Length: 258
Length: 348
Image (cartoon, rainbow over the protein chains, first blue to last red):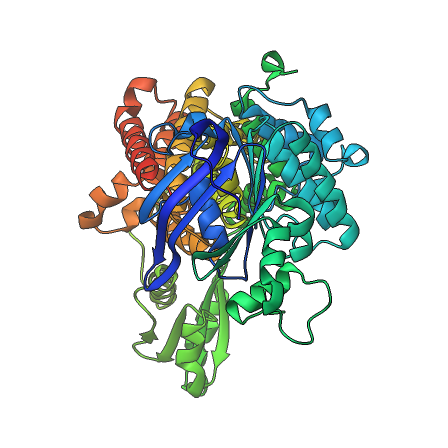
């Protein structure tokens, strides 16, 4: 397992002993995380594991019941507005305005930031050139998701939060999306991504935290996690183990119910 | 390569969003522009009809009323129908006849005294039968029938329709837009940016004002061309009152939409706010129809204040000074509703 550095300037996101309850249900149960600058960090877990709750607390959209949160070295209390200039967020269920065109949507989001990318840059990064003047309502699922990511990139963020950005996309659209994330990372950005696709975590993430019932139950690079499985592999498992096998061996359950 | 200088204005972009939302939604445009005009047209035609409708009198079958029937049929303005004994009350209830004559010498009238047309029928029928029986009138009055522009029902109706339209388009337009933005998780997405929240709320108001000018001009222009309804007072006062009406409605809309999570929920709330005002605030009939005890409450409603002020300016040419109470009520509604809405608004 990688060591977690302490130096503040190396850490993009950190939370300690995070707790969030909804009535009787404990969604996040004492969760610790540290995402390094320049890193792509994955939160992997089944539906209901607490991934979205955790990412929304880090995004400053949910108030934790207990625990500390630090984004780019500062907390949400007080400095929230300035912090929003420096991060980009893609939410799981946002539906952008169907009646606006791609370009109008980007100009709207760009207008909220003091500094940021030009509309042209955003369209190039997310490969939406041919759809520039199309209405959002006419876009395919993959194009809509790329537009959502383009909106998240409008302010030239240092950290990108992605909540299941490729769920429901076909493999080709998914790969196209991954290349958008790679381009963002090539510019020095950090990413926190939730997913329940092992393939996605293995392709994108430097490190992965496996989350179950609101806690981190394993942490490391995808390769380290798979290697840690070692001799514990169940009989009849495929020859090369995957993160899915790691998850099954840790929890006795599969990542996806479907 | 940052482009600080070319940053578009967020307030302008949010307002453009609102305008595009409307102009790219044909149904919304229909409701804003066509609905009040169709309503004015229908009501104007219904109440403009110059000929007096006849009074429908029912004669109970086989009650020995042939003389009564013959006498009534000789007088203009009555339409006599024979009604079977079993159907007498049904005919009255359904408005098939306004009055039933169910007995003779002296006549027996059966009618519902809570219906104005039935009371009128009672007086007219009795008058006609008494005269036919030989009663002499001591004098004949001269009738002055009002049909001059400025005093007709349509003149009274148009300012009320204008007030109602200003209020309902602002309420529905703003409350719906906010709640759909919330249900689509777009509000949450906007809050996740550095967008200033007051820009979002202000854009709702600015977006409405762009359309308000067209709505007001269209309805008043239509009433002028088709019904010859004129504005006696200053146009600038009509414009100012329309603005104030839109502000107070926008405040109400923000309040109604402050916490609503679903379109169904906000529709119910909007009806709860709108329907009492459609009935109480003197849109279609005078507020004088309600008991004195209710008058202070009715007077305090924003739509009553808006309608009263619009009527004063449009029908009587009232100067600005005469509108102090009504504009004060509208201003108070604006301040209070905006204040509460900002406090209770559910951004996430």
